[in-house]
Length: 393
Ligand code: LMR
Image 1 (tube, rainbow, N blue to C red):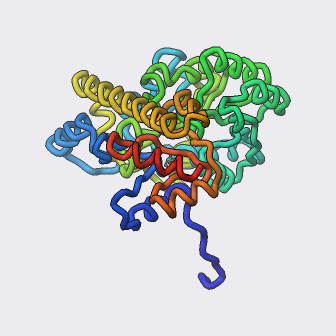
Image 2 (cartoon, rainbow, N blue to C red):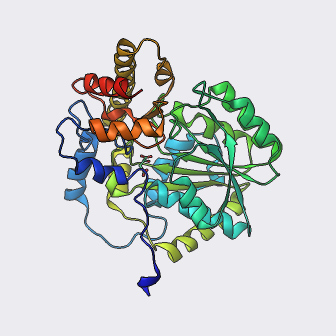
């Protein structure tokens, strides 16, 4: 059986984890996978998470199955974090999923249960795993313009022109905040224009929110979701708690559907639960139990919000540190687009050959597109990093 299979290339993003780990050079720098790091280059467990885990250890008295939708308290907490009071809760259903990727995969399956063939418009570029994950599930992906690589801005007009021509009923996948890989999000006015076209063309918005809290704030980052909820009959939202709760390996995510009314919500809910049962049966519990404990406890929630604010501030500071260091070494080259991005990512704007040279000659790791995770920058390594970049461009 297996002799018919061919080996697959390493994942474009996850492959960098092992490459960096196996590099013996002490000065190596990892700007690859989207994982937060502190000033010492560590990815610590959040204090709010540690406290909730300790409490959970004492208070949890059963590991019995919770069912296909996971924990109701988690789902209610995430629904509130996502939608606040922007829409009638009777039209909403949220299920817990194994991470944001699990959520995207369940959404894809449900879309294909609803219709035999579904086209999804995705930004050019989008998260590298959107294509194999959603395409592999059977959705047809179509690119719409987004990032202007020459000017390092979002080309909202071109995006809107394309979406205006999209067939009624097509799906549009949007990044709620911290667009991955470019780090560039539409302004609130631009979001309103995008929402207007989606409503006019009767497109189904499908929002991926993997970085809530990392762009402007936990509420601010849900802006487009709440705008859409007030304007459109149906909406799909995938959430991830990997980054904002630092629960990467615990696989905590959720999938929410806004349906036209309570009766259709009930149908979508039963379909989602049935689909999950055929796929992975039930989501893992631990991380979601931690999140629901944090969200339900005022003190823990406050501490968590402060920790998210601190992570966001560090990312901003590191972006600015790198920009200054690059300016100092190469005044003729403009890297100021780094400062327009939010969250973990932005494009450095260098060629794949230059990316390879950084890796080979300097032990600096980033995705081939020159997407960097600014969390990998520290006060200690920024000088070496800027020297390396200046040497290859
Ligand atoms: C990333 O884009 O680096 C993260 O979302 C991690 C991943 O799974 O790709």
